[in-house]
Length: 311
Image (cartoon, rainbow, N blue to C red; front, top):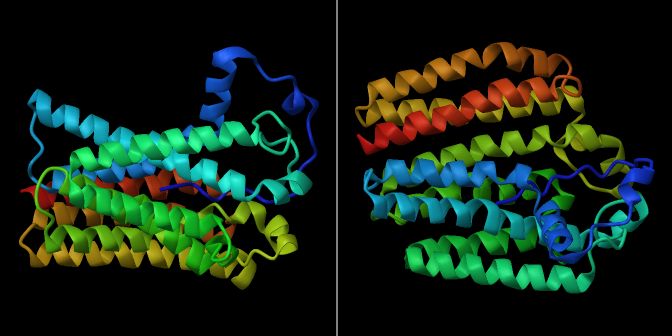
C-alpha cells in the first residue's frame, strides 16, 4: 500500500528545499499531497482495478464504474497516501539527521498537521471500505496493519529487506487485488492465487528501490536485499522472483483453460529478458530503464491475467 522505500542516503541540503513554505489552505493542501507522495499511488490503484476486472462483475454502467472509481481512490491516494504519512512520521528522527530538508524534520509540516492528516485519511479509507463491503474492510484492516508494522516499532519491518518488502508487496498487489475483486463479486480461490503470485513478484520489484540507498541503508543498519547480498546477487534475486511469479501465473492460467491470457503473460515475460540482462549487469545505472520496461511489462501482465480470470 506504500512506496515506503525512500532513500536513506546522505544528501546535501539544497537552499531551495528549505524555502519558506506556502501559506494558507493551498499551502496546507500542497504539503499534504507532497507528504502522501502521489508517485506511489499507481500500483495499489492498478491492482484494485485488476481485481475488479478479475471478478467478472465490472460493467460499463454508471453504478459499477462509480464504485470502481471510489475503490481506486481508496486504494491509491487515500490508503497509500496514509501509509506514506505514517512512514515519514516514524522516520522523522532519522530524517532529522540524514535528510533534514524533508517536510517533517524541516518544520514545513508540523506534527499537528500529521496527526490531523492521518485521522482524516484513516476515516476516509475505513468509511469507503465499509461502504464497499465487509470483505473489503477486512483487507483494508490487514493493509493498515502491514503499513504500521513496516514503519513503526517494535516490528519496524523495513529494517530487513525480506520482511519489509513482503509487507509492502502484499499490500501493493495482493490485498488491493483481493479488495477490488471482493468489491464486485465473491472472492474466488483462482483470484486469490493470482493475487498472491503477483505479490511474490512485487517483492522483487520492491528491491529495485533499494539499490539507490545502499550506502545510507548500510550506515543506518537497514538490511535491505542489496545490503545483505551485494548488487549483482540482489539484481538476480529481483529478476528470478519476478520471473518465477509470472511463470506460476502462466501455469495456472493454462491449467484453468485460459490459453490466450497465458500466452499474453508469457509474451510479456519474454520481452522482459533484455531489461533483465541490463539490470543484472549494472543495477544502479539501469534502475530507471528497468522500471520503465520490465516492471511495466509485469504490470500489463497483471491486466492480462485479470481479463483471463473474468472470461
